[in-house]
Length: 116
Image (tube, rainbow, N blue to C red; front, side, top):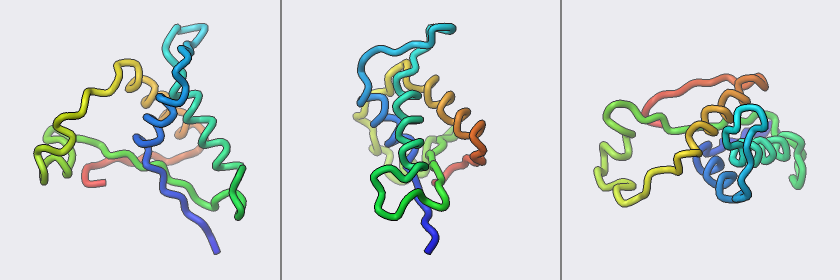
């Protein structure tokens, strides 16, 4: 039987960000890299099948919720959705873009839209 793993992108981005708190920066650009390093490491373990009884998955999709001008469909349905949550750390979002670029460079197809 074929296996498909759907990965909640932002959940894993935050997980990787908070797992590696030692400051890591690119020696060339001085940009933060701790989340990117952690996320790529997690994805490589998954794709290699490390720690999985059935081996690596046949298919993997990293899914992210793309907010438009009106927010996400969740915030439209329930305006208080995440209303008390702090903004993400400043150094996280540039790393999200880098992680997504790395997924595309590794052959991943990208698609985004509301209502995910």
